[in-house]
Length: 110
Length: 119
Image (cartoon, rainbow over all chains, first blue to last red; front, side, top):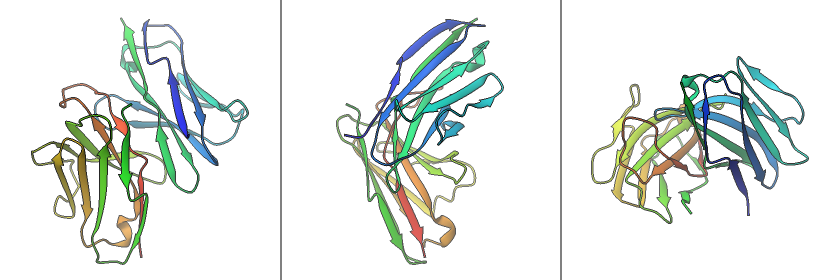
């Protein structure tokens, strides 16, 4: 069964802390893995990862993919209250299918 | 739990025809359903939000007469692309939430998407 599992389901940290969010997957014919930040309604695209070991970085956010161990991590350093959101991981696989994880709800305390 | 299905997964149609895409919540009641369009750079554009039994709320720039949304039951929402044109070709994704839409982010469970190709 194809699946995407995110952990933890929820996380509460203090401002300034660093967090690591996990996404593991089991799919047939993996194509790419995407990270989104969901605050209001529509998730905002963060990263797309297709190759193992290449870190993608945007400001305080970074992400990396391990295609051997079938997982990705999303790191957020020096967290701010504005980072509070649900972070979604999604995997494109086979011809044109997508599976979203259940998300990690991150709450940053001031 | 919280499984959302979409049908069909892929559809190819001729320009000018209408296409209906179904979104179903299989093991929960979806008070609110969302329809998205995914663009080549992988961003998701929210098209509309629908609450069961009421009219859909469309985002700015989305033609309500072209993209008809019906949320007739707590487990089914449909998106009909009317008089489809090649520029409507895209990946359409639905999501469903068991909660009535509040002011902040809610849990959304995503479907597997439908690839529409209009010739």
